[in-house]
Length: 495
Image 1 (tube, one colour):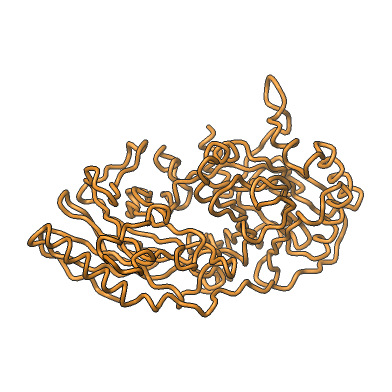
Image 2 (cartoon, one colour; image 1 turned 60 degrees about the horizontal axis):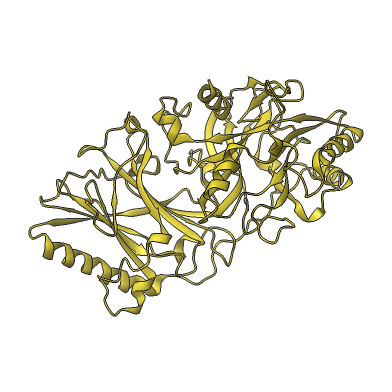
């Protein structure tokens, strides 16, 4: 039943919930006693609601839900409308469940609509220490000229992330936060005033603008639908248990705030975007990367005489939500905080090199460690079983914490080796160092064999200097080589 509710909610289908506490006790304390500024307790939340109601707003409680697309697909309840895990990470996210409207406050939905003067308000704590988090606003369904609704997971501007979040904590983690999602300046000012009256400090208040000039606001058949997801990545060592507890019992209070009287809209203009890029590129390392490629090929063929090699091209994608919105293409969850590269079979991004691995075949994945060059706060790559029937689930991957020293054997005495990585991907690593074995535990419906078609996705998050994803022309693209004892069945077309 819980999985069914999750599937309905994240698809945008609403369902009724009870405001009463669960049988046998009260609701978990994190919902109300943690989700506020330190020392405020339930009284602050009550005062906030009272202040809004006195100012002419109806206030209705929402919720959050863990988003585990991989687990859902493996359990036979894939993401509605997609039928797969749509290239998700293994780490769970949180999605906001918003009251459908002021008229239907007990129906919660993951895809919600907004009147021009409404707001969604989140009060609580930021996640425990991790490499990245981001409160990510999406346009989920867009009303087209013919009245149809196009499914999208396209961002609508910048993200409140661990580098930009306003909070009073000594770090951005485990710290009090309030986030207002609204298209309207007047509503934002009034919600801020209510927060201050309730005792929440101005220093924790963040506003995410749903830009009215881009969107079809309002309820019903003519209104776009939106979603907000808290993305998480890589709990820091020692914070893993706290991180999982945070996802299981999120310390948030969530409200839909609706004016009860006619209000003249005062929309925000489309906010300025944080600018990608510093002008400093990784291109000085191009020849080093070429030498690393040649050294990998020489090393592999020396140990495996007769092996052929095949370069697999990588392409950038999912770069900017505004681009995909204009072109009417679903980017499947872009992020301005990231720069992404795709390889293998990833047809949604028009990357269609069908890679498979027999028992005696493997990949070498190599490139620049973008964290070491200062172009990312963290990076990872995942290998996916990328056909629809295989769920588009991750079956292998790693991040920059494992890169140290992995290229040294190929570039001895070269100081630039510390800025590089080189890792093997195989179905049979047999305890070989710097090798990733393809597997997905706890997913009996997936069989990984010589016919499994693979796709690779490289993610680089948050350039420290800009607090947003890196600029495309400043990144030296990661690369992939397939090795086989047989000649390639066909040449890979380089783009």
